[in-house]
Length: 113
Image (cartoon, rainbow, N blue to C red):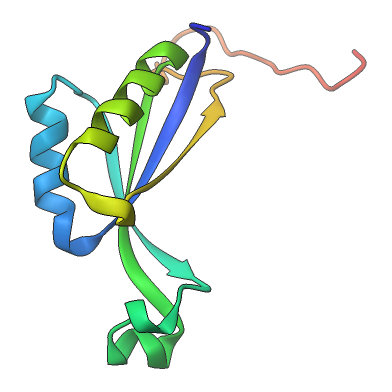
């Protein structure tokens, strides 16, 4: 249950700063944020400009961590004041780390080799 995973959070732009502060206040360091767009959302949740474009402007966060930590984080977020507009998913993280120059190159093998 402690395998590495990538937790992805998707939030409305309106809570971006509040969510960044919350993550930092709860000792989550080294995460990535990015602009993204939600498609297929109920039109009642869209601004007039978003209704024209057919997408909802949102912010995404990626956090690499052990699976047990991601489960705890999702539980803590569910108790925080972010409401149902915060979405998440967890995916296995096969490899991660800095890409260093000057070292030996890794040559990934093709399946079956």
